[in-house]
Length: 511
Ligand code: AMP
Image 1 (spheres, rainbow, N blue to C red):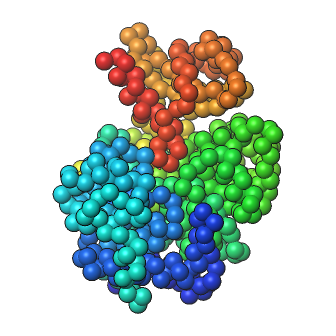
Image 2: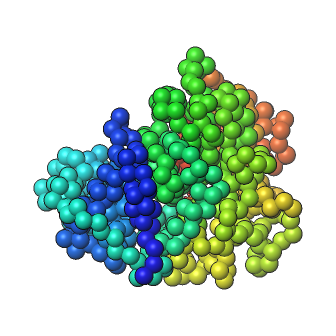
Image 3: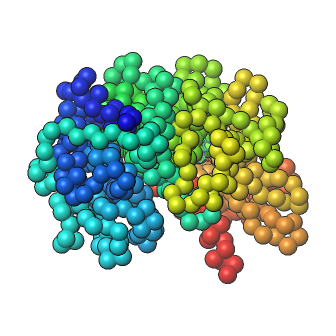
């Protein structure tokens, strides 16, 4: 038997039963209540046949319902399969089928999507609706809670290799793959995050607007706070002004975001003035933080941002700039405790400090493999090192700089162009709110650089003017030959800008 990820909730409920574990729409759920709800739901799930070896899909907004369900599933010994709320119903059906989930717990906001696919979900034996639903065979979440036994449930994993969560990630092959994160993986990453982010030393209040279905929003957004007996203020949707107001009103101490969130907060009109100085710090991760956004955010709100990094396959946190220590802007910091980074060349040999190679990671946080995809699993491991697909370099003090994703590299006339460098320049232009750069096929150059840009509210700029601006700051082959202005750029459920979607749009246009 080994420790369950759910024991973090059990322990905090014993230590600080009265403290608010999660605040949602003005309603507080103390740790004792979250623990009780997860026990009662767990016992009802057990009556539906849920237990070790079973998969339960969770399709829910950031809320106490998400957290109670997540812990309830773990307590039965089953595996949680969180579903991205922004997926098309067809993609949701794919994930649920691929995972073989026998139960689907869904929030009423997803009811239409579930209705659209319910007939095709052959593996699903029970639908559980949080709130109203049109699906007649669905069971009610609140009825299951009310009927559930209050006695503590905690089925411990048979081995620390038992899978706690199956997290689907975009992957390079097009079809999403389920990263199997074990109890050991997630417990280890939560503990390392607590240490690296200096949690548990005071009563912190987190603003969790990063989606809980995503690895960053799960491990840092609610698992680490629950383990550190902190309070989570759960926001189901990111709106820059509402988020700033919540930070101010809640006297929040920690904000977690992806760079597009920070950019939108920076771009709020200057008469919208919010005091965010209750924050001890902000953490940015999930995508490269443009230097201009970081600088403007810190100048406007007087809050330090620490950039970190990690892929889902690593539970996900790999590195962060040391809190209160030496911050190196433009880097993703140093590996967190228990995690190692090595930069390897295409033969798996370590490259010297300062040279670019593939960032590889080793540690208890590294996933067991991809669900039902042994070939993909084999490809992604070099021994016990996982290949992240990210190009980067280490300096002689152990700070890691990410250059770009290997597959996003653009090769113009044989010269490597890193989209991120072009995007960073575009972000410095005063009219630019969002930028993404891809390579498009070009008969003469092999590939050429194309940029997509969204402008800041009330600003105008012509593509020609932006190209001219790039000319002043970039090498010949890096200058975008084309710039297309969109209202906003396509983003993932976690708020990351999706170059992949832009490539699809280009391919469609060509076809
Ligand atoms: P996902 O597993 O979908 O969350 O994506 C993880 C990927 O996001 C990583 O492999 C990186 O390519 C990217 N990423 C995460 N954090 C950063 C960061 N701070 N800077 C640049 N890229 C990042």
